[in-house]
Every structure is written in structure tokens, then in C-alpha cells.
Amino acid sequence: MFDLQKRLESLKDAFNTIWQKLDVDNRLEKLVALEREVAVPEIWNNPDVAREKTTKVAQLHDELDSWTLLKTQINDLAELMQLGDESLTEEFSEQLSAMEANLDKLKQELRFTGKYDHNGAILRITAGAGGTEAMDWSGMLERMYLRWAEQHNVKAAILDRVDGEEAGIKTSVIEMTGSNVYGQLKSEHGTHRLVRLSPFNADHLRQTSFSLVEVLPIIENDDDVQIDPKDLRIDVYHSGGHGGQSVNTTNSAVRITHLPTNIVVAIQNERSQLQNKEKAMEILRGKLQQMMQEQNAESVDKLRAGESASWGQQIRNYVLHPYKLVKDTRTKYEENDAEAVLDGKIDGFITSFLDN
Image (cartoon, rainbow, N blue to C red):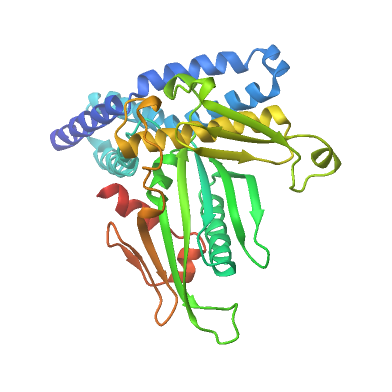
């Protein structure tokens, strides 16, 4: 029993250290406050705000429930062991082993210590030069990330999409929400390169294509990224996307230009003009925050236009001919099953990036 007591104390110390690092107490207080807000019927007078807050409640439960359950289990086991019943030694040992394994699994949370790691993410996929080849490659990447989201119970919504003339996409903007989504997908930010035999020319020649994937945190608090309204040009226009008669007969699409940095964000879908503007501002805040990180700038007004990493950082090669290999240029992690990677199996690349 003495050895079990030592194991339990070691488990408690490790657990308490991580609990404090993850600031669980404050996050639990935030959860309680949000639950009080969504319990008030009047909140549904503004459905968008209500949905946003209920989504945040669900996200916090996803992040915290496992920790609160393990804390309860540890405390319950400590009380039982204090009774000193030697006949339960084997059962205590099994419970301890299960809790130790659970804590090891939950330690992965320590990877997500960035300010926005627990937030959702906006993915912007843009085809590079190369016409149909690059557009098809961008469409393949879009599918890869949508399959990853599906496999990880992450909610994905396409906010804006411009199809290619023959295949694939010119651009796609995807909003992904769930637990630690930005913390996981920030590893995907950069230029992705594909090498394959072209399916789009008669000679079936080897072709290299590029696509830019931008991963931006969803920033809900305007105070985190302060934007001077005088620095914005906002244009509204007829949406050219699908969505029915109302989309095509009203100026619902929104284009926002941040004049100091020349960043342009355009959103057009079935939403109203106001909702499109809110989404465009959300993406702009994420893009500006990304630039602040890249340039080590303390505020938006310190940013320098045109100095984002953008197309300059090639992060991953996907080779489908003459052999099959996907290799990350930063971590050197690689996978031989390229088809599985393109079907959403990117966790190895994510883990390798986070461990570096």
C-alpha cells in the first residue's frame, strides 16, 4: 500500500502542475458564466450571439470535462486508500494505472499553450501559378482538410469558394470550429508543393504545382487586434456564388481592404451583408494577427505591408511520381502513403510540428 500511496502522490503532483499550466480554474469560471448567459431565454433575441455562446460552451466542455472528471477520480481514490483496506490493493493499482495512462493522454493539451491555440481557425487555400494544375491541387488540399475535420469531429463551413474553370478551385475559405483547432492546424500554414504526372495534358508529363494554405486564428475579441476604421475600405457588391434568388438580387457580398497592409478579404455566400461583413472582419483580424507574429510586431500599426511569409515558405512536398512520398521541409517528418495523407491523415505532420 505504501508504494501505491507514493504513486498516487506523484500522480496528484503531476496533475496539479498541468491543471495550473492550463489555467483550468479560470476557464471553468468562464464556462459557468457562459452557461448562466445561455440559460436566459432572452439571449435568443439575437440568434447569432446565442449560437456563438452555445458553441463556446460546448467547446469549453470538450476541453475541460476530461480534466474535471480525472480530478474527481483522483480525489475519490485518495479517500478510499486512506481507509487502508489491503484487500483492495490490486483494484487500487489498476485504477491508478488507468489514471496515469489518462493523464499521459491529456498531457497533449500542454502543446496548446499559444494565446489562440484553443480557438477555431480560418483556412484560406489559394491556387498558385500554373492554371488548371494548381487549381486542381488546391481542390485536393481542400478535400484533405475537410476529411481531417470530419475524422476529428471538427465542424467545417465553407465561407467562400471560387471554382476553377476546368477543375478544382481558385480559392476557398473554410471556417473550422472545435477543440484546439487552431493549435493543431497552425502547422499547415505555408506553401504546399505537388509533383505528379499531369492528368490535364495529352503527353501526361510530370508537373509541379503550388498552393498557399493560410491558417488564421478565429479572434472573437476586437480588443485583441485593434483596427482603426479609417484604415478600412469596405465595398459591397452582388454575390456571384450559389444560394438562390436573394443572393443574386441583393448586394450581400463584402470586400474589405486594410489599406496600410493591402490585405483584401472578400466573403460572398448565403448570409446577409451584415453577416458577411462580420465574417470578413473576423478573417481580417486573424490575418493581421498572423502578420504580427511573423513580423514580431506589437500592434497592427507597426505592421509593414508586403512582408508576410506568404508564398515564400514552402512547408511540404507531396510527390506522387516517380515515387510516393509526403515530406515536411521543416521537421523532416514523412509518410509513404500519400493517398492516406490526401485523405486527411495529417496527424503525424501536426504532432511532429508541435513536438519541435
